[in-house]
Length: 71
Image (tube, rainbow, N blue to C red; front, top):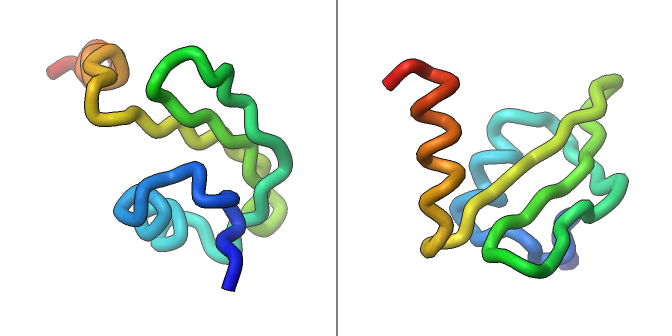
């Protein structure tokens, strides 16, 4: 069975997106391929969303989330 993300996400990331977004469909892979970060434009129901998933060496995403969340 092929995955909707084309195996761009880790198994854990894939499971999380599936739990948050019912029946996700990949619209476009917006990743640059230059860093260990995946950026996917998806559609879930009537919503268009962007999923940004960091690789294990990408600490910048954690810094950005901390800044947004005020942690």
